[in-house]
Length: 241
Image (tube, rainbow, N blue to C red; front, side, top):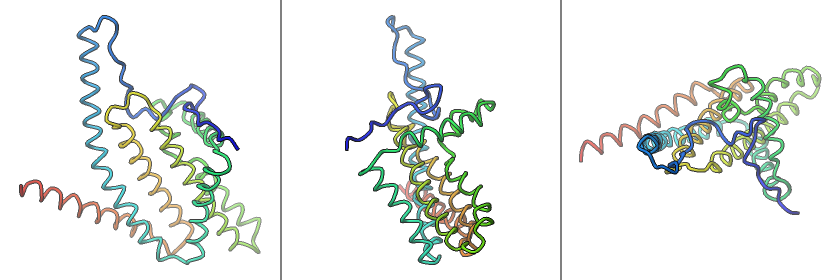
């Protein structure tokens, strides 16, 4: 089956990614000083963002490690359903159909919700996992309607958490990577790292609400401790030189 091409445009206004930075405009035909200055300023901004992106990668590592440590203490059935959800999306995405249209619909919904909040209208659709949020909102209703099968409802919800989180992170990464003029890939490194960390925190908070075994505070404290240790060691090594 031919794989559906992944569209660069996701919202109704033909946006191609969160506005973490402006695209490099290039010089006009006259090559005037103003244009050169604007390009230079954007290059400097990209370098700064690239540095902050590298710093944020430490938080990505620390958050992932702390999450796996906390999640690893949970019941093996719960863990299995979550990872089956992640794997299910990956297999469906690569071997059956690339569900870009599903992601696009979610983008349009969040764009509509935040259309009256200018600072968030371009960023929120790429940061917030809309299908995960919807799943968490309807979970209490599903539990109420299936009072005799609540255990299975919970497991299906965990499966959905894995699937929807994987969908959001994969397509957000594709959106950022497709941007043109991303000097040093600064927008991609910084933007994706930020999206990943925020989504990891949301996932931890969701699991904290669903299961007593998962502590968001312990997860956050572990992430902070690991990140602090890495930053401290790096700074100590730099100044020791």
